[in-house]
Image (cartoon, rainbow, N blue to C red; front, side, top):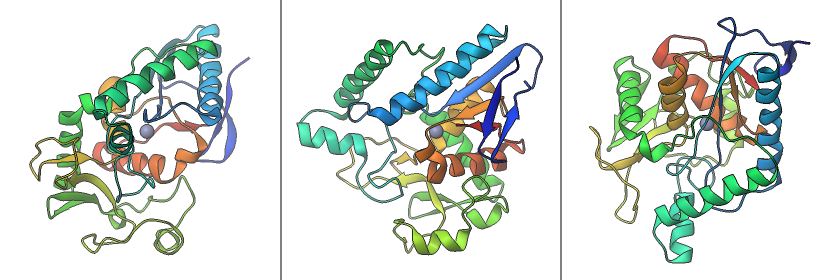
Length: 266
Ligand SMILES: [Zn+2]
């Protein structure tokens, strides 16, 4: 029996068809490793474990990539505030990478306990800074992003499809969200691709724009295209990631690659 999976983009349960016969490439947004996993993580990763297992049972050659977010995910999920990992490191008086290491191990141990298979590749965001910078440069060159004060933002008005996944309109985002309106943004709904680091920010890298750190969403666009290509079969994640994270991923990837983003399964 073929796999039927809910496509969040079309809001329908669809029969899965691979892009290439016999092969399935799948990317699922992984955890931000700043604390113990919760029941929502278990729900998401057990769900996609079933999808991967069933596709393998059907005979597909499945390549399963699930990232580890260890930089760029700020408190509040938007563009302002402290990095979640840095905040935990400050609270526990340890270095951010100790937090990353500890909670990455805890995450995998918890998933092992639940008999969730480990992904084939678990790329870390902090290990893919050059790829993220390269993608941001592409978006700037194509007119989809702009630099201001050392930070780079995605200009949502250059993507007529922005909002198609979550169903939110740009005007609604301007009013009803917790996003802090930064004066330096051209549009309130624009989101960060790169942020200039303030003096207290420990996780920082050189870039063409500033010493800073990548935005939360760009890591998944950069790592999924690196390991699975410009388009692939299934992209998944927890429902709480649909906005702003997955919406940002689609916009960045489709604008940078001129290729359609895959089915979003949940
Ligand atoms: Zn992601």
